Length: 292
Image (cartoon, rainbow, N blue to C red; front, side, top):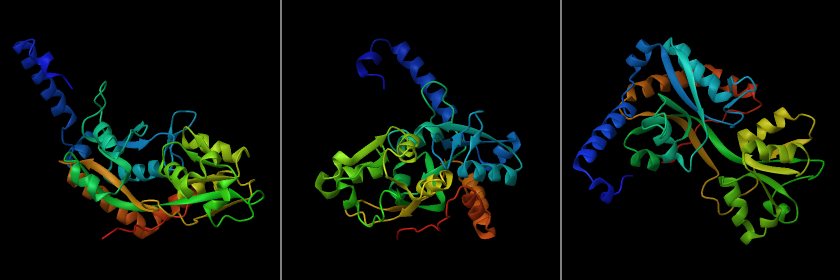
């Protein structure tokens, strides 16, 4: 943000900057209702990078994953091509909505028409005036995947007071493990910079357990069938929530696009197509649980 002292240097410079800023905001906030998307022949979809089984790019640079397949179904329903905007998560969901939905980054100012896998949180929705969260289509949960040849059973996180467990850095799982049992697990935590890094700690045998979302845990078991894995959900005392719905996000003035895509999601769930897509990746589709 420009400081007041800088703006006072020149009234002309100040006016020019304001006009430029207004033009950029107008471009970034330009509505893309469903008719405009159809007329353009293209739907721009944001999905997170390195986020298997939901979204990632393969070695050829082609987008893959559950959310990618759902997004392609959006394009088929609307009769348009799908362009993927694949990017990393920012500090929080508010920043992701700002960067990928309504404003764009500082260099290219490119935004998407819809964000996949947006946690459906009414508080976040209320405080973001330029984006709308809608149409939850899956219930995320936390879970542990463990190697039964190392751990016969995992019914409490107390098992990891003296046994290593992997987790992705700065995630809900990381925060839980760091605080659990008054910090007694701290020496046992093996953090991966990304989920893929944490996954490798488990699949290479460096650790015998991994804490992640249930879908990620099931994906790891599915993609490494040679490991005698089991996915469980032991009690997680002290965690804010062990489950949350995920949906989509659109620009605040493109709500009709959100409604149209929401109808596609509903149709996919009712027809069983949604469950089939999840099953391709070894993941059980879980119905949404909305808090009252």
